[in-house]
Image (cartoon, rainbow, N blue to C red; front, side, top):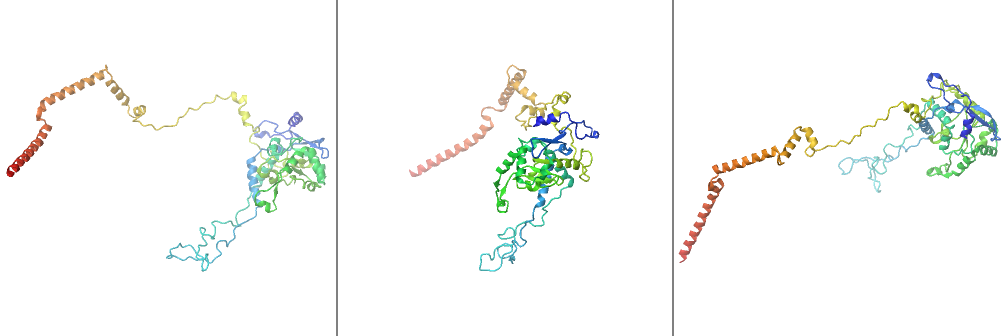
Length: 438
């Protein structure tokens, strides 16, 4: 399909000029024409139409997701907790002095409820903190321009087969995207005829996918008239309703929409653009009338609105950067220096760090090493000092320490004499005691 499209659009001019004031060169961002297929015989073409400029708009999935999130809140219904919940009793605090908390307590007697705490959110049966109220801000306001930008982005995404397939649609047998059918489809009134037309256009696999996806919903929704859920299928967009709405409404997954009243919630279900759209020839022509032929001027069908213009003509930045023209003008890539994690070292154990803190540390260590190495002048100096120290000690001992006249020995002799006297005295007392007995 892609090869046929490229071959068809090879020698055709652009459907709209690109303004020169944006400072960009002309570039074909989309094929210029779309084939129109006969509704009763989709294998044949009835002509071509120009590709609407809106189909080449920038893709903004972030914008579509944000607008869908806020718009989907506008159908919520208010819910909340009863105003009397937790407070429907005549509870009153007992005050202090009763050895219980000051929480209000249910009055009366004869039942377990009497005397129990009430009102507080910490009490059983009391009111809850911050209950839901019906005056909550349920809905969200969305700017009109923002919604229009999101719709434009969805229309552009519907023209790209990769995005449509990424959304889950089976379009392998579809001739091309956008798929445009002649206006005779708007006059179809029978569902069987509409179903056969869709199958002939290559949508049979897509319709079967929808039927197979029907499942029972999980949760309470199956009790509330939402028992089954089903995938979304193609959406048929028409210009005039001559019976097409009634013909399509009973086909599972198929929806219809008027081209002048496109809804973002249907164009991007779940906030994901890329829905499979089937256009009638009148709808695609009216789309061109609504949005105009360029993204430069104000849209004729939208008051005070211009389509978003892309910041880049070619959004493939990786291809631009990796091109030979750009790479040849760039210098080689600079490798950043390897940064090791900064460690906190102990200078008492790390010599380099101690040398940084004390510049004389390494010299001191070197002198200590040489003082212990034989044959070095430092070692000889240490040994000479040691010999002089020993000689001086001996000389001192000769002069001041003479045999038994040392301080320690003199001190010990004082103890020895007293001990001897005490021993002699005991011996004398023992001899006297023996004489008395005789």
